[in-house]
Image 1 (spheres, rainbow, N blue to C red):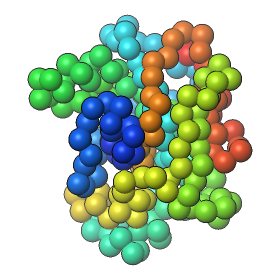
Image 2 (cartoon, rainbow, N blue to C red):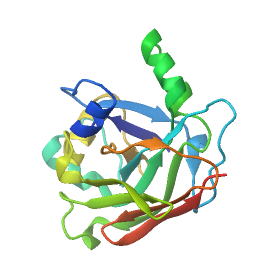
Image 3 (cartoon, rainbow, N blue to C red):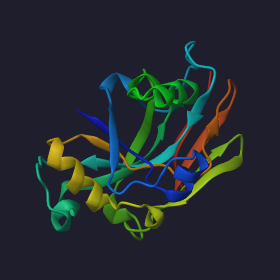
Image 4 (cartoon, helix red, strand yellow):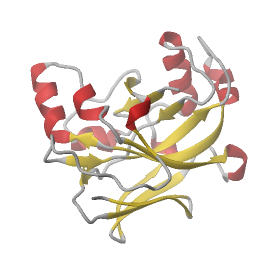
Amino acid sequence: MKIICIGRNYSEHARELNNPLPSKPVFFMKPDSSLLINNKPFFLPAFSKEIHYEAEIVLKISRLGKNIQSQFAHRYYNAVGLGIDFTARDLQEVCKKAGHPWEIAKSFDQSAVVNRFVSVDTLPDILAINFRLDINERTVQQGNTKDMIFSFNEIIAYVSRFITLKTGDMIFTGTPAGVGPVKAGDHLVGFIEQQVFLDFCIR
């Protein structure tokens, strides 16, 4: 099982971090040890003083595929969920300035939070999914997948040029504007449309 993450896929988020808008999908990967499931608490790691939340729609791949054409990409996922891509922002900034890879800031243990998935057939519009993240009952991120720079189908087509997609793989599709730090005691609740998909605490 692979966790593939798309960066800079919402223009306002790219701008808030002073990043240029990409001309093609930017992706990186997290290992399976980065998964945090079943609404278990997230424990702040000792190696970073600035862990940021990034709420994202997550696709679950449902069949084997390589070099998938965009017009057929919808056949390769059948469920979506909500995830948090936790990022050690302080470490990431050091990596970016040095021109180094981001794995140390993105791929650490428990940095990929997911809980449950639902069939795409249960959503009113798969091309315009509303989602949001609340921290301590205050909305900090709100997004809609219609605002993505690269659609689900474009992401799948591009990534599958380089990496074979397998059943059970997950694709984090990018985060909207509003990212920020978490602290011990924070309570995070994530929604797709009006359904709760994440409900966990920071320790």
